[in-house]
Amino acid sequence: MEDRNLNGVNIESAMMRLDRELDEKLDLLVTYCMDTGVIDRQLYYEYDVKRGLRDANGKGVLTGLTEISDVVATTMDNGVRVPADGRLYYQGYDVRDIIEGRRGRGYKFEEATYLLLFGNLPTKRQLEDFVKILTDLQELSGQFVRDVIMKAPSENIMNALLKSIVMLYSYDENPEDTSARNTLRQSLQLIAKFPLIAVYSYHSYVHFIKDGSLMIRNPKPQYSTAENILRMLRPDGKFTPMEAEALDIALVLHMDHGGGNNSTFTTRVVTSSGTDTYSAIAAAVASLKGPRHGGANLKVLEMFDCIKEGVKNWDDEDEVEAYLQRILNKEEFDHSGLIYGMGHAVYTLSDPREVILKENTKELAHKCGLEDEFRLYENVEKVAGKLLAAHRHLFKPICANVDFYSGFLYTMLGIPRQLLTPMFAIARISGWSAHRIEEIVNEGKIIRPAYKYVGHHRDYIDIKDRTVRVKGKE
Image (cartoon, rainbow, N blue to C red):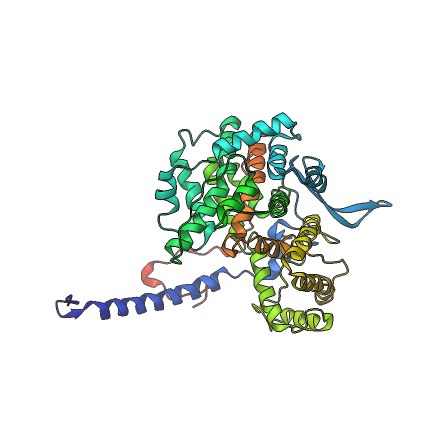
């Protein structure tokens, strides 16, 4: 048996004692951090601080200009701005028109990516050439897959995506060149490689962490991005045209949403510092990972897991309403008092992305025999808006957002929950790239908002004269 004693001291007991002592010290330090970090809420009003870069009505503070996409939620009526059904435009084109214009023809994601990057819809030849470029750039070497993706796989695929993005810097012969030309080259490579990195990272997680079979399937050059995702993800590699189109549409709807969303704003902030493409996109992915941003559709699915268990009759609106009221009262689900997938910072009457996703979700639910579950989603959407408005004493309507149906749609497509947020990243990389290039082309100043210091100036105290203080008090 291995000797676990050193000079008469039991090593395991000593380590346990050290761990306990470290935990106790950390607990004390956390207390100091929590107390020191608390700022009087009244000061935010006194100094008119735009918390979250929003005004008192929740509207985003104007911090930049863009031509890439436009989010519209109001209209003018006799000189007064009033809520309207939401509209989303990519380079001036309504996103619904972009989707409908390629109904049944595939390559919606590729066409919309071209539009975001270059400002115009491609001709037939231009789209074919662009698809060929992405196809040529999507390959990942066996060395990269083995040494980066499969080494130390992560349970959170967003972290695996982050690791791979940072490592791609080392595989680039010219990573620090931030010219528009080189940035475009790097962006196209990232757009092409994101689906492979995400899917391969998931398969590595399944194999190395969950002890499942390892399946790495190469993409087909004649397939679209949406088709290749389904092919690489599914054990048999098969899918229907309807499934591929549903995923293609979902990717288009998630590609961009103005410059003010958290991850895109992160891209522009980090880009304004002059850093490289891989660092800027890694920062965007880190932002998107947060449950308040890209992880919201997973919270919706988890919430519906509880609703489906807690509501016996899914068609009974009164029972649905009663359960949602308990969620608002912090008595059910995660006790946060939030109904996930409801409400948006800009849209009030409707989120155009949600409207389109709902149409496709309904179609898929019928095909999959999940009409009952779809009706439950509809009932929750119908009831939750009224409940939230009453609960928050709001006079403006509250609509479902893009996250409400997207998780349900992805689940019916066989996309595992671990890939829900990475799917968002696969789509949003096109928008991030367009905004990064726009920031570079316009040579903007480094983005630096101001923070007001509200602490107190104090005299330095020699260490021998100090006592334990918390927030300036003994």
